[in-house]
Image 1 (cartoon, rainbow, N blue to C red):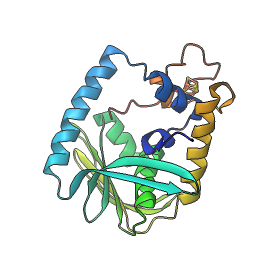
Image 2: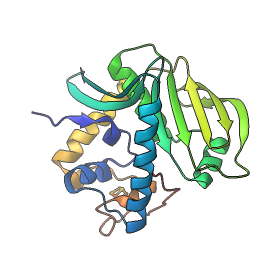
Image 3: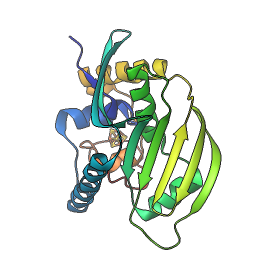
Image 4: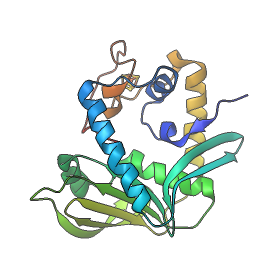
Length: 213
Ligand code: SF4
């Protein structure tokens, strides 16, 4: 039987790293663990305060692949919350949402088989100089409205493109990687920073901003 695929693994850019993380766990420095605990605490608090069902479980068999996960908040929208550093927030407002965050929300929407809009909510510590902007931006999956106001930036997509084929493709690639780690594709990215294979991986590592969640 094929392993169950979690949405949080399927959105990672490197299939070999994603499979290794699932099989061996993440490799985290002390600072990363502290940042993660801090981010998780804020994340849990916000989910309790949000309107809608927090930690809503989803699961579906799509084209023979079982995919599952938990939506941060399911209400009028499919909402994902991300706690990030102030410098990462500046980057997000300038460059748009991180693709793997956007995909996570879009994959949940696909599994739910709903036409609800998707919201990606980024939060950071209050800090002077954080941007205030409202903008329509293009993403690979359709148009998003960005509302940036100090420590909160929200991207909302009313009718994103279908990502069903991409979800199945990612899930199948991950199943193959879990079965044969050595022949899985490697994609250097921010993911390398916590990859259990980082000491052995031949790939060039280009580690970007660290995401607390
Ligand atoms: S170190 Fe980076 S490129 Fe290599 S397997 Fe891990 S995540 Fe992938």
